[in-house]
Image (cartoon, rainbow, N blue to C red; front, side, top):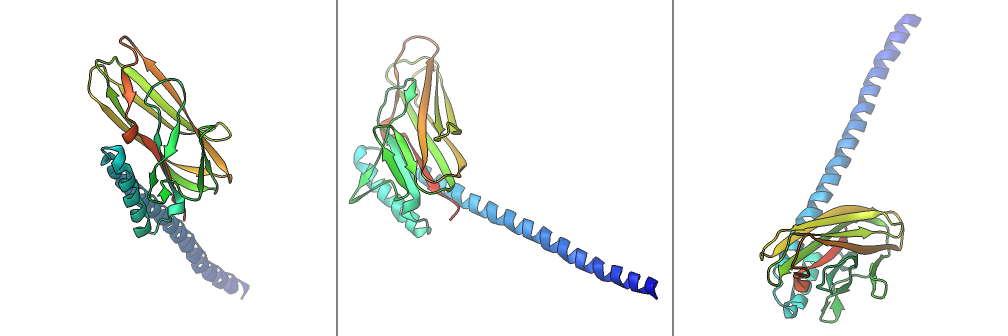
Length: 226
């Protein structure tokens, strides 16, 4: 009799075990699909941002483009407070700290309520912890004839952890160069800080002919986990 009971209990346990396995597998797959969907949306929106930034031709058009981006953020249920874009303010390529500024448009600017830029320290403060899509777009021009060179910008947080590295090889000649780098970063602390440091190396003369195009160079970020 006990043998029969053991067989029945084992038979009952197996379906329960299979149900539990099925539930766990389904949950993992669902979470993975949700992650991919969120990341896919972020990438698509980043491509939109890149195309809009590339459309800028003059300083006068900056405000119009940023306003269009703000409208697009609203259309896609991205709150404006979660978005920031800052453009470069110094065309000289050198070793040091990169300086930025938000773009003004109408009564607002290209930086949401989650962000505050400390111009004196060249630091972007991010109020909320979370996952963010961080990207930088760099455009270079040659004044006359330029040597082969390399320009690198590294975004580091308040703990000196590198969050994004963008290294651009500049060929000798006169052709302009455009390059975009991006990453999804997790800021685990509230009131995080981002600072961009630069390294520039020219491998031969003539020196100082490479310049950064200010109207088409900048960095942006937006929150992707809500």
